[in-house]
Length: 579
Ligand SMILES: *[C@@H]1O[C@H](CO)[C@@H](O)[C@H](O)[C@H]1NC(C)=O
Ligand SMILES: *[C@@H]1O[C@H](CO)[C@@H](O)[C@H](O)[C@H]1NC(C)=O
Ligand SMILES: *[C@@H]1O[C@H](CO)[C@@H](O)[C@H](O)[C@H]1NC(C)=O
Ligand SMILES: *[C@@H]1O[C@H](CO)[C@@H](O)[C@H](O)[C@H]1NC(C)=O
Image (cartoon, rainbow, N blue to C red; front, side):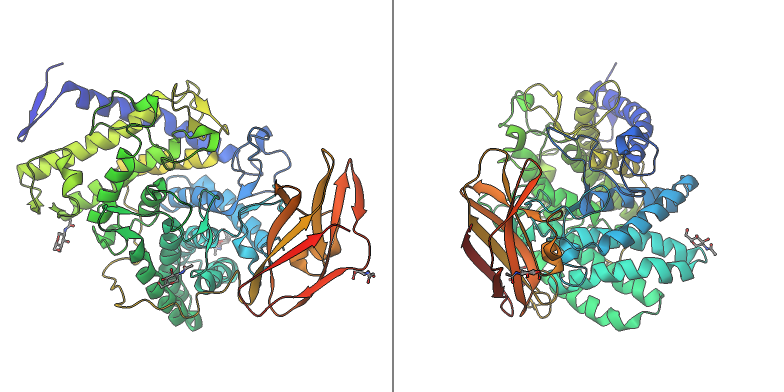
């Protein structure tokens, strides 16, 4: 095929052929992704969801190596945001049933007491539950504070559609109470640390902060529409505080958004691209205050993130900059030895497609000193300035961005098996699918990337013309897990035989009310010290015991019960020896 001439730049036949191939792949893959996504929801009738409560999203049907047969609030919310958006755009009216089932399941799940607390003492920060929606009581990275925000965002989308379609009564009676619990949690806890979206580091995470900000903004507007005015000023005040804090993740000297404040990593992470696409507001243009996909900061960060994977994996070897490469969670990742993920590679493409939507709508794009390195990848001679859509520079840069975005999808296409199944990861050497099969989030990512490539414009959530406060306030946002809770770490030295485990139960709901059956498994990662951290009500006298379970037999510690009183705030550590 002959290269063709477009404005001032030559595009080889490869770019044209790639675009056609990507279109064809997405046309084939989207229905597969949607069917496989829906099959991972309880009530679907699929054999993959046997025992899963109706409306509950499993992360993956994989029950070993790894066992992802649980429901995560984060993953479920992102999956349902994609489903609700399809429904409210009028693409598939049959989705109403499963959306209502999800809503019902979340009303139930919010009330389940768990190791992070009860509904009123921090339990909404619990990241994962068993598929029947009983509490998961094993050791885990908890709490995770993005889940309530993302669930609120998904359900507000549904609620706004209900209001616009003459069903405000249902929005008020049934959607609002769930949203309010989640937003009250976000407003009270955004200034406390928690585990990030990869569940490994307890710190502050850009993704968590960004989605919290969005949820509070749109929550205030949703409350106003429903005449729930008493919460509006509280949510708005905390939204401004969160927006202020959000700015602190930017690393001006290295030109990227630092994903986490802790963990000894570079902070170059898909976390930041995911935050941009899940807080995309087309009405906000390329505003950098909310790190919109086409903002100079988010584009600079995207380049730094992509470049971090160029030299570390053989799957990317021989691919010269600026060509697209397979990307993963973060370059230091060692989970399954560290590999590219489908959803992170797709996130790069989605951020770029979102950017193209805005540039096209605005009829111009800006190159700033911050985004210059991003644009110079494609046009080394470009300089800082505003380029109207009538200019050759605009045509060159947007065509190159489209081509680059397609190239990331083409990588996903290359490593998608013939049956269209999307796992969590693909091998960094061979590209063979790895880890959990049929990852629900991978399918949701394929669907949202496709919508963005097709120019589907999401609803605005109120990110336009926001002013960042000149000094950051934290008032009211620093609860330690829910209003009035304390993070208590239980350490107990206990020698065990192979197959025997140590559990904890005690006198409050967060300690499972003395139930040996739902007692919480401690982590043996510092054996012979067993540990777990649980959020408990502040200023409260607590009794507890450790128990052993071995081959179904339960052995309690000898009397008396252990006891202590939680402090008024902060955290607390207990160091016990089994007796
Ligand atoms: C409002 O939405 C709920 C949930 O889908 C539905 O059961 C109810 O029939 C709707 N009411 C009206 C008036 O449309
Ligand atoms: C709380 O907010 C302040 C002000 O934005 C910020 O400096 C601090 O790092 C935040 N801490 C957490 C844990 O969010
Ligand atoms: C470009 O910058 C100007 C001035 O800051 C701004 O008004 C405009 O919205 C920007 N356009 C885009 C597409 O970012
Ligand atoms: C420990 O607590 C349980 C539950 O309240 C109680 O039944 C039991 O008598 C207590 N044990 C002692 C020795 O006080």
